[in-house]
Image (cartoon, rainbow over all chains, first blue to last red; front, top):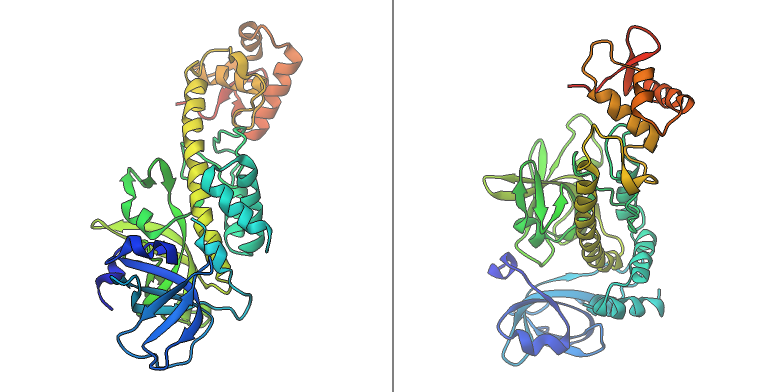
Length: 102
Length: 298
């Protein structure tokens, strides 16, 4: 884990990606599809817009559901993922729309 | 859930109308389950009868009871960055006029170190670097304290803010994994709400307190505040008590003296007030039942 985790990481949605290029961010979204290589996947945010997330190493597990990704925004407005956390939905579904409200 | 919640979000953007505030609090109690609501309400019940508290300020939050003279009994939801930026004022911490001592944070466990007497977690809520959270382990009981929460779990932490060598940390008295991530969304809203309400209360509280204390303790007239109970006493009882406090004679103040100084109160009322104050322990009788001294006298 790099220094990305040592500072503030604003929670953003897809429409705010362009404003945070080069900055560490926190992105919460629902898994839409995973690239066959496992190094890229697409999440949809609370407003329904999609964002691409890239990984340095391919995913070693099949994950689905809501993910919280911490990483840096690239020049192409994708997220270079440093770490991710899967949100628990075993008890009740998570409402991504709520979290996207300021 | 469902259709109502987006309404809350958009209104929160523009202004926090009192309707939304009250509604948000109701929702908090529903959604946060045993967590935040229970903590806040237990803080509310924690009022000793003797402690001064500016009671009737009509706080809409029904949970935050501000006591400028004694320790804040609130548990305040905060972000880690707020805790790091809190400044130490005498014994307590302050975040932009809001006094905090017990706090509630929610974040991800990044690291967990188990020691014989405590567990040190690093909790990260994305607003700043991870915060050290220490949980003391009860070495006698083999129970839930010994179960370490694994890294990668979102938890709710309630604890005291501490600062040591300019480094902030939390001493947790409760760490609970979040079962419903919507609680986290609620937490973000609660932080904004609670800080707004507390800040407003502090401004109102300090204004009211100034007007209460300026007439002085020895004077009789309380002006327009006749309907406001202070310290749990009625106006008459307060007046009687304050007069008795000013008396430095060893035998105390007699009922006759009280009546001659308090023209607007008849003897029966004075006697009732004296009886109440004496049973509450504010005053005690000296040479006879007619003379009383204050227990708070310097």
